[in-house]
Image (cartoon, rainbow, N blue to C red; front, side, top):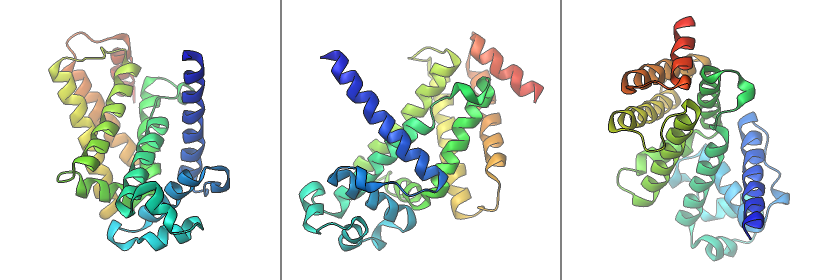
Length: 234
């Protein structure tokens, strides 16, 4: 039973990774290979990435997916359900895209890669992030998705740096601050300063993360020492 569920989880993660990679590169997902529900979610994500929530209708999503309009009500109960499903797809995509990749290089290069893929993803899906952050303060369902996305990113950093799964309060505060900083930088970039190069934003977030972690860790792990050394060297 455990082996079967593990294979299913890996297959689902692989599908999410393939879709996310296509979306970051600008290629359209091959929706004919997906189930009907996922076909609708992909269509919804495409539209919500391009337009604000209020400018997308049920008819728009159905037409984009080339399916009968009644299927949206059947699977999601309406536009809001489709929107939440699209946000959950974003969360799954980011979990894959912003995990460390060893082939990027050392720990510093892996953290830069995580940030780079984050910015590339939201450059392709600008309205998704803007809508999520605008609604999260007053909407418990979108706030839960935002919280889960931040928690996943913070855990990926902890794992990469060899830090405890339940960090002390200072480190936990520092990591959440880094996640908030990344979101605010991304939001301001998408709304005001799109002329800035992604590599400039990556370096800004990298330097901020290094400083926050270095000042919040009492007993640096080899991963933290490697990170701070790389920062000084660069």
